[in-house]
View 1 (cartoon, chains in turn cyan, yellow):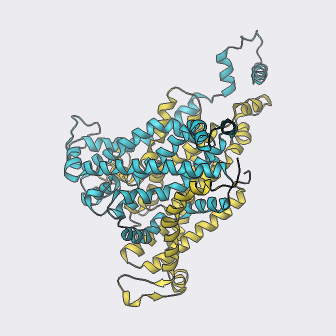
View 2: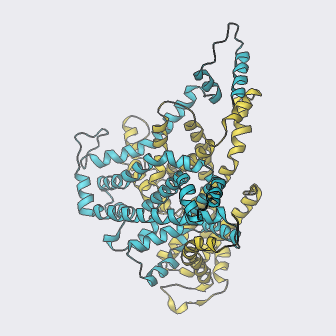
View 3: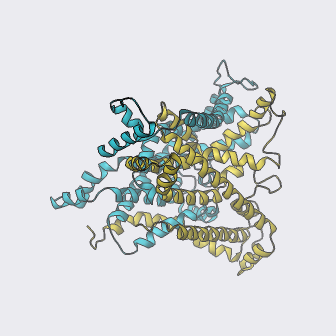
Length: 303
Length: 291
């Protein structure tokens, strides 16, 4: 490593054709050479353009949410909370919010636990039917969720799971599990097996070795898969729309679509409902996105 | 470590059970329905139909072909642009600059609000009376009252841009994750050998990203093909069926016409098409051959 760095430094000096004595290779200079940053405008111009594209829609929603009905100000002042009062209390977003939180956490717990179990089986054991199992999970990604609504509806009716958050959690877990499990298996495969074996030689049971050695290294993957699961559940629309017909079982997306149709012209209510639905998930995302990228880069995307 | 044991079966048992009940059984019943005449509004006609539904679909239904063609166009344009922009975005936020953490959180954030919320936000932005085009026209850009979603000439572009808004971050996150796993030494070695910036990108970065690009493109293509919520809530498939995708057509057959038999046949067709392209794609790219 140091040797390469030294060579690079020499090379850069040669290319630059320095006639006077080269400056001592400081830490700072070395890092700059190693990472070869582009020209600042190559980063900043496209980044600012993309930020505008990303943020203007969010800003539009915020403006609609906090300015009084009928106003067309682009910078709303004074700020009014009338739309929030309407959606939270009159339309019932308070209840939808609670349902979404319960469902999201339920899906998070089950998807994480089950994908760790299954991922460990795929990564650490060789068993009969392994390839078929993996192939079946890959194939499940080709299933159009929207096209399965009719048979699923019949099943849910039979099991008495319509209009229950439990039912929504089960359906969402079933659909999310295959991909999460594949990601988790990839991650566990990347954790070296030697420490685990050493622990078992020292007399640990496999279970104890898992909790002591594997689980601590799994943290980024747990955060990545868990937040994927929560965000997916929070945004799920089709299942919630089909399987929850009673308003006290609505989740936020269903409530929002109801606002879209029912109050076609009340953009204020739509925007305030949107803010209520967006804020928690964007906050969660802002906090975990670092771990998300880490968790994925630890080999999980390599299938 | 690899011994004969019941442990792996116990570990995958809950997953198997869930998949059997909520994925395998529903697929089976869709295949069964596709061979039936099964319409809730005309129960006296119900019964075994053999391949009649498929014959009707292939030879007698221009809307099937039209929706299939639109689906293909949608997937090609959408996934192609998402891949390109996602790669550029990932490369940008992989560089070192002040405020990188905040920039990442911001540009990735639309991915967190997919679905109905995206639709809601863009309806606010695009509505003709108080949306962005109205404001721009007040500033002298464009004409007032522009309705991009109601106009047959612009509706496709509006849908594409909306879907890009939430889709590009998905690619960018996955590709950024993979960019970060490239050892720095490779770039240093390439620099030593005198490789230009572009050469380093094509000879080091792209080959390393290959698997991630294949996997994310495949997943995204399938998801975009199956995507219903955005198009359904923004245009409803209109104007004049112009933006009807295959899944939307299925939903309309099933929900509006209660024609479960025919809708199921369309579903089977969609599933077979996806399966065919996915297998071909995985074969061609030799995905997973390293394992």
